[in-house]
Image 1 (cartoon, one colour):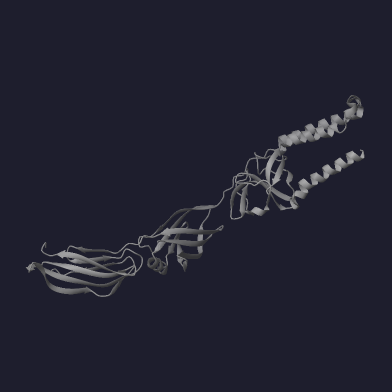
Image 2 (cartoon, rainbow, N blue to C red):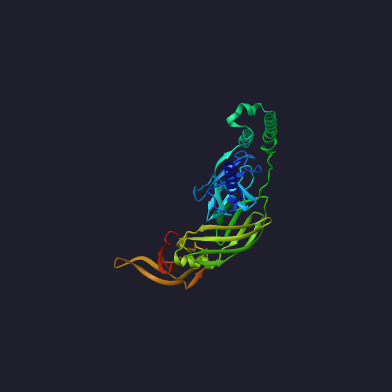
Length: 375
């Protein structure tokens, strides 16, 4: 080997070291790797040669195959499944579950080319065979017994290696079927009286155990909440009354329930949005003898007073005659989702029933009529 050949060999060896081992610790525009294992089968097979471009030169996206290294001796070549908030989740095509999240800064290379193992091994043996030949005097080289024996040895060795790679190394056995625990939200709703949130899950090989933490918030204000297990897949969460009152006063209709739940195999963290429609109270006179006030909100309703004005149909200079006034309700508080019924004594011809109550920091007046002549 002359000086020129030695220099070329040294340069090639240095580049190979840079693009293989060096690329794992130092910056390199490209990285050369050989696949070990079957996690990316059939996209990449064991023994395939993989070339990656630095992510500083070629950005990656969901669906691309990338390379990141846990240590200098252990790198992973998997497909990008999801990217968010500076983390990347990858998964081997042949693996049943995704990999743990990694920082996007750890993903150094994007795979741009893969060379099947049979091809690059064949080319390697061909290059080895050519190194025994004198290109300038090819005929005499082929007639040399030593050259012929060497070429025959290389050919037999190449056939054995390729047969082993193709028949055994590159094809995995049957993929293992792993039962993966999982939890998905089936439904979430408020009870009819709005005091409880009912949360149901679809659980696969999991079981609810306890509530580690619970809070509900709206408009920048957070309240602690409590709850209990209804069964192994359903939670009952008590909504704090203070939360409803602050929402009612400010006009908020949206709040968020944040839970940390302990399961038998993991911890479940959930954040669930809920809405509530604020409705004015429903006032009515039933059968002309009962005043009914329904509080349709999960907050107390302040009733200021109620007065009955009894009227006689006998005209007094063209107008009905007010005969009697009777207070039937003084200041009282109707509980959340509560109902109040008050009897109205039937006398004279008819009566107007007047009710004052507080709603959204305003005084509201309601008037209804009870006709007694129909009785």
